[in-house]
Amino acid sequence: MKLKLRLVDELRSSSPFVDARAVDELRSSSPFAEARVRKFTFSDLKRILEIEKSSFTTDAYPKSRFAKLAKKHSDGFFVIENAGKILGYIIGYKTKKNQGDLDSIAIDPKYRKLGIGKLLLRYILNQFKKKGLRHASLEVRAKNKTAISFYRDMGFKAKRVIKEFYRDKADAYQMERAI
Image 1 (cartoon, helix red, strand yellow):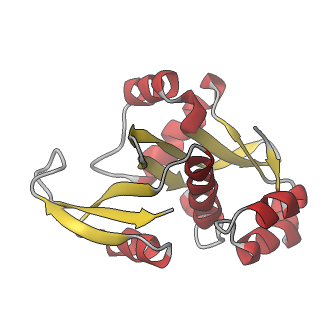
Image 2: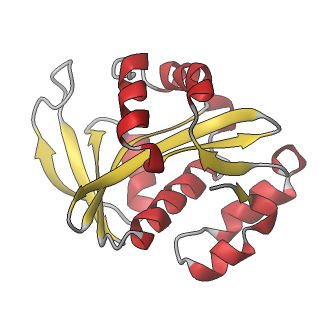
């Protein structure tokens, strides 16, 4: 499903999760006038890996993990692109009867702080809502203050600490929010 930001008014009116300001910023700034959210395709994998490696130093997913996620959760793997260049991605899927899990989100460092992450997160939350899910959860490195702040701003709350969650034995917060 493609989402042209120029035509986002329909989505904006049907969903409380679309940040009108972020969309308007992207739409009005000439470099992002053609930005759109679409489903991941395997031809995107090289660019996704570049974004992943520039975003996560110790926890970057390998190519095999992305391939597995794309096969298993193709309806929840989205990219945002502008003028043919992928700027970021998000992966989310149903894990329980009423809950969706945000597996991963990353934005190319050159395009951060422009509302792209907010737009993608709101997009996946809207997808969860369409599937009848009522809660969203995620795990975030406990020392990643930037990401924790971003998720809190998006309505997520830390529910518990997961000890030694990451390969390097770092702790994670499990964060949740209602949809």
